[in-house]
Amino acid sequence: MSILDQVVPFAAAGVAVILLFGLANMMRGGSPNTSQKLMRLRVIAQFVTLVLVMGALYLRSL
Image 1 (cartoon, rainbow, N blue to C red):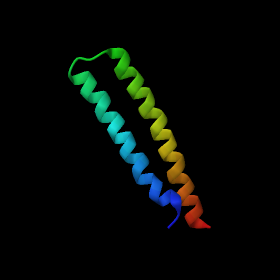
Image 2 (cartoon, rainbow, N blue to C red):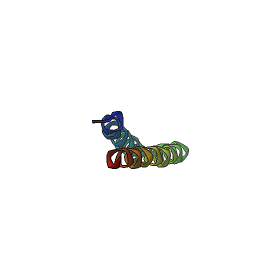
Image 3 (tube, rainbow, N blue to C red):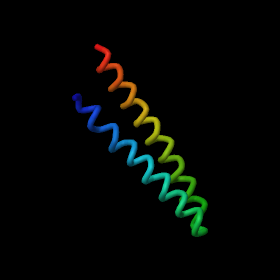
Image 4 (cartoon, rainbow, N blue to C red):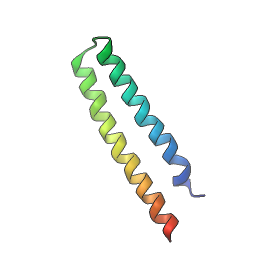
């Protein structure tokens, strides 16, 4: 099991946490600016998670 296989679940959980914080902020009527920043952070976290998943799959195929 590679280190990437261990990191990917934490990265995915991080994306979920950021998403929940952003949704909670919107639902309670928080600052739209904060919601926008959280959603941008979510997109970056999703990209990083995707890169980690693809790297893990690539290393597994070797």
